[in-house]
Structures are given as C-alpha cells and as structure tokens.
Length: 410
Image 1 (cartoon, helix red, strand yellow):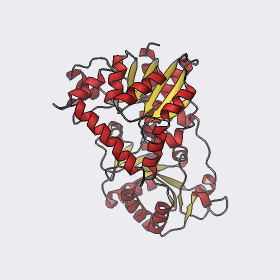
Image 2 (cartoon, rainbow, N blue to C red):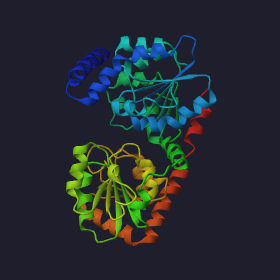
Image 3 (cartoon, rainbow, N blue to C red):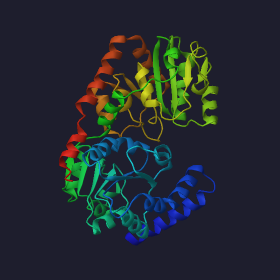
Image 4 (cartoon, rainbow, N blue to C red):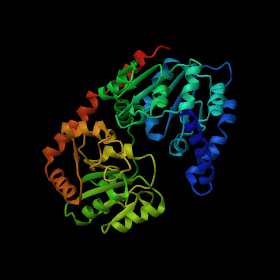
C-alpha cells in the first residue's frame, strides 16, 4: 500500500507540473514549491528553536491561528515556519505576522519529507483538521518529533476507517495527541486503537470571537445601507446566486443586499451583475455618494467578508446549495444574526447543531428561500431571537484554545 501511495504522489507531481502550464493556481503552487527549501535555508538555522504550523488552505489557517498565537505567546523565542499546500492559503497569507517564514509544503515524497524536516527540525508540529501526509508523518514518527492535530473531524466514510485504510491509520499514530471536534470523532479513533485523543471542540469558535473583537469598518458600507435592513450574502457560488438574484429582482421590500461571491474575478462579477435587474454597484467603484440609492453592492475584494457580517441583519452563507462545501457559518453567527444555508450540510456538525438550536435555517430551493427571507424581513422578534441563539451558541462553545494549550507540554 505504501508503494502504491508513493506512485500516486509521483504521478501527482507530474500532473501538477503539466497543469501549471495551463492553470494560474497550479502554476503558483508549482513554482512556490520549487522555492521552499531555499527559503527555509535562508530563514532557519540549526540553532533556532522552531514551531512548524501546517494548514491545507486559508480556512484551516484561520482555524488554527488562535492556537498558533497562544503557542507563540508562550514561547516567543521560537521561530515559526508556516506551510500551506494550497495557493489560496499561501498567496493570501505569505506575509502572515505569526510566521518567520511562509512556504508551500513540498509534495509528500520520502525525500521531500526528509529534506524539509532536516531544515526545519521543529520542536513542535501542529497540523490542522484534515492534513494527513503519509511520508511526512512517518518521518516525524521516526525522528520522535512532537506533533499534534487540532480541530480534527472524522467520519466513518473516511479512508482511516475502511478495511484498506491501514496505512492512513498508522500515519495517525505519529501524532502525540489528536484534539477532535466531537465525541463521534473520538469514538471512531478509539475503535481503531488510537487512544491519545481529547474532545476539545472547534478552534473556529475562538477565532470568530477574536474577529468580532477586532472587527473593522468597511468604506462606504454605512452610506450604502443608509439605515435600512441589510442582508449579507457570503461566499456565494453560482447555484446560490441563481436563486438569490431571482429573489432580489422580485422582492418589494426596501432592503439592501451585499453580495460577496467566492469567486471575485471580473468575469464572474459581471455575470452576477447580469443576473440582477435592480440598481447595483461594485464595491471598487463605490463612493459615499453613488452607492446610496443602490439596492445591491457586489464586493470584488478578498478579505472583507468577516467584517461585512457586522453590518448585516441577516446572512446567507453559500456553498451548501451545491457540492462545493458550506462556508464558515460561525463568522456571521458571532455577530448575532440569523443565517440561511443550502441543503447540503451533512458534513458540517456545527450546521446541524445550529439548525437544531434554531438560529440557522436550511433551504432547498427558491420557494423555501423566499418564504424564509419573507419571515425574517417582516418579523423583527423572530429575526432577533434567531440571531441571539447564534451568538449564544458561539459563546457556549468557545474556550477551545485554552483546553488545547493546557494539555500541550512544551
């Protein structure tokens, strides 16, 4: 099985190389990985004490950041190596303040794992949520390095729990401790003989409370909203945008809509504009005067969404109408507003819990979307009650970082 895995990794390297000729993100990752070892050699010496934090992408970085900050605060003399696999993480966070050097993680070959660890020689390794790279973890175990996995979430459909998943289960034994989000994840691991686990919860609860405390104003948003009810549409995908634009075009309510699509390239922004038949302005073209009479603002800038939720009375969070994956619903929840999502949320335990708690509503088509929005727009008491339930849920589930830091021995 390990030989087969290594063949797959070798093929992956070839695919990434070929794909880099045609796709910008693949090219960014391919070029970036070629520079990793040189960058590490420039920033890390054999005398340095090092923390290595690894995240798949931007979402996992945000999830892990409260733990990274707490560890750095506890050991300010340690250097931090921050690695990403995905360009969507690296390209946005390549200058992250938490890190002394930010790099792409080289592909998971035996030679890459050895060379990477030779250069980094970490005192502590933190992986976030899903990142299980066999050769890196085997090399970590062989060297007796201390590694932890945080905010881990396991389901019985995953390869770890299949009859053919022995190699991946063995890789999990490289972790000194695994901090899982829920009891079900812990039970799945314990049934496979992995006992070094703690149900700590999801570090995103702590992260969104940090975001709320440091929330910043966004230019021209108050002028755009102009005292009216505002619905923030976060990280929308085409399947979300089709039904939302239909509602926006038909509604008679005097409300404002802030559209924050997942894809902010010019062609997609223009596509959304073409769907809308009401006065619409793009964020980059807005000023204090020209946005006041607009009904919709389309945000074509990355990094504003978590601050924009603070201006909303209702949030629609995208990704669950199709199969792309639900975006972070805790970001709007912390501001105490009700949330609407699509139908495909089974892989997101926080969504199931928050629906049960009464603050999140799932819709499956235009008809149900329109009905729920009508109720939330016209019923102030229900809207505020659902929003308060979301804020309470976040507060109740916070404190995850202190649980993790309390167990880690440095």
